[in-house]
Length: 212
Image (cartoon, rainbow, N blue to C red):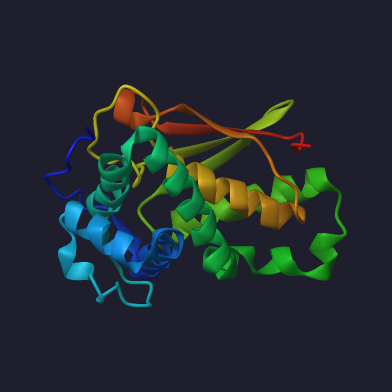
């Protein structure tokens, strides 16, 4: 059973990012499934009343974590993981790619760059969205065969205590972001450290070589 989040964090996502994610969850599991998750997460007030479509920082990280913990509660660790991955991917596809920091990534000049250059530019652009628009601090470092994407003050596992990595929504979001940035390639993304299980930050390894 996932840990329940009982106190607010005082750290916030903009309403728009929360709204995009909730819409993505609805697409993945249907209206009734989403309403059940909202009730289980203690967020029944959001049923038919999604966050506003603006950039005000008003959606507490604890609420975002509660959504993802409720997925595990309702569908079990494996089912919850699969749904969170799909919702994370849908979240990027539905709206995050339209945020300012990624605007130039769709330009023709970007599309003709080599894959390595696309990753080198696109990943930091994704990190910049969250650092600039929310209280989530994200940074990217390049290594020989992979990148590390580090989230400080993670909204996916805030206040949770677990024995394993649980930031599946972030993995899905990174996977879809990489697919879009790269022009259709899939990449292996692995969460290697998670704050919920006692690590300092949540760290994701992104291998440079596409899958397949």
